[in-house]
Image (cartoon, rainbow, N blue to C red; front, side):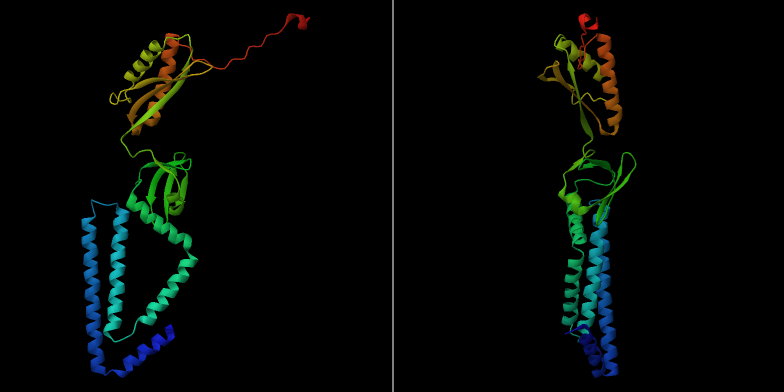
Length: 277
């Protein structure tokens, strides 16, 4: 049955009923449909209160909207059924329209589904700093179709949820503390214990470096230039730039004072006096 045939059937049903019976049926159906919609609105209100402090606001908003639209559809279906109207044609037309819209908006549907998975998994929240495929920025919002970022050079970036769901995401601010790896190379002529003590003393004097976990000095390998060292310090995630700058400057200054050599590549050029003459 097509939509036009459905409308014709509705009009025929209304004409066949008596005026009084038709009025009573319509009033009762409308009242019952209104009761169903009111009950679902009450249900969405209760769900919102229960999820207020337990779920992400965006996730709570989507759940409430889903409950509200479900109640509206059920109320309309009950209204048609109470009036003796066959809704199979209407449901069939809605199904065909849904399939057509699905083919026409596959990317959007995929982004919506990916967004639901992101909201349930919660790998990050608004305000977190994340890295997505070498793109680093602060999360501004998590929407139904995309996630908005603001990069640290103040650019606005929109990433579709489908792309984000398939990518590797690193949350830089998920945990309250982070580790900084300071890598450098010292000459083989240097005493590594003296180098370690100097680096630990620099870390102890920096206000952003944490005492627990304690800094760790480790020799990574011996290469052609000297002993490759990695010095690990932990810090509050809110002071990443201050900690990194202070540690590199502090180590360079302290090593200069202690006359600890940081080797670098050198090229020696010798000119023969015989060739000059």
